[in-house]
Image (cartoon, rainbow, N blue to C red; front, side):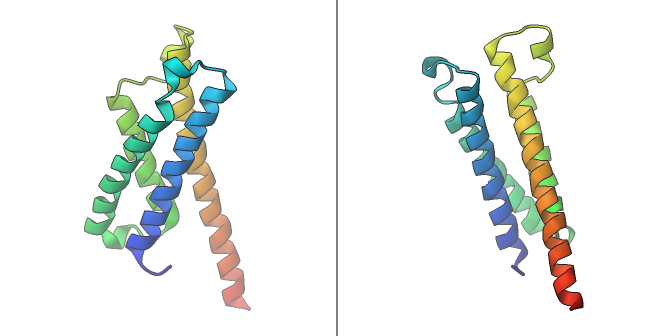
Length: 136
């Protein structure tokens, strides 16, 4: 994929859907009732799609700076964590007040960091595979 905007759109959409799916699985894993956290994954999806639009505008403005997948993933991660902070979700509050709400906040932060690391590792592995094919 040579086009920077298409590549960045693919990265942002994948990260958005992975964040949404992990938010849903986190609610299922800790057996949260549907009434309390039923719209959590939808809220994460809407927030992630807003972040995707903001990140695409940023990439369109600074096209030359975002030439690799890991840079795009870090941009998305910074914007996503900023969104979580501005929404009032704090990852450290769980350690002082053990409630389901604070546990979900902590898991949202952890999930997004894991997704960023996975996407960056994918970029490293993919670039190594391409570099070995170019040498041959």
